[in-house]
Length: 390
Image (cartoon, rainbow, N blue to C red; front, side, top):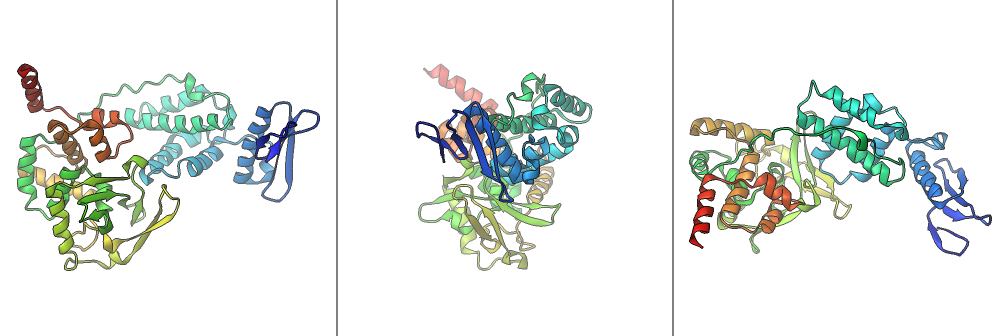
């Protein structure tokens, strides 16, 4: 830690010289000391941050040059976004390589202007849905916001971009009470009935359901802990386990009687179920809460396909639901619609919104209320009757 002329700590790599100027220095990866002097401490810190990162990326031959967008993207993703879910990281990577890299990847970070970002979004307009363009907008925005916070740029290039995502939101599918009862009557004859019913009782995401292991089920406290997610990646032909979607998605859910009975029945039959050799595999992931690597033995998974003895793929659940909907003669829906249905039933039955936010694992209450809670005609009738009764 360097010090100023009064003996106060100035932070790593920064010190004040006797002539009053500020020196920034560090040792490169090749062992050579790199140093430069500045009139202000702010300039010294900015140089230190920029060139220390540059050295970590490419070595000392790159020092004195500002990072390119491509270099910053990879450093930003690795350093600042490593705790995100695999799906979110994949979304950032897909959008960057599909739409951003070819346009500005080789540019110096400080040279990117609003017009460059505007052109990226304009070029996407004829070929992409608004939602996809918006994802690219978010990727660029988040990446440059981090660069701004780290003093690598002086102004955010999106500040001058004209982009409004006024896309019409598709109505989010959920089941009203009548549809839910019809669906369950048909679903109970299906091998995945317990999985469907558990989501309707807990609001789990599909990946959270697939990743449940027996240590998540507390039979004494009658709770279910969500601490990982699991999915099958078709491009690699392998199962992947990781942390939940966000830090707020780590949660413990008190179980209803029906949810408890579903899990307990699976528990007492776990020794007699069919198991594939695939279940002998041990998957690992880094827990963002501790920074430690955790192991997950696939044999400990709660939900196993009764026919194959392997975990049920996320897409298989949706395919199964589509077939059930045709048999029940109801409008098709996905697994995520069951999560929406759970949230709607909770509100209809008077569950406190903040409690529902915790159960669903949302960081913001607005996500719970604006996205996952739906008003049915029946609930409107009840609301007006409540008003009339006062």
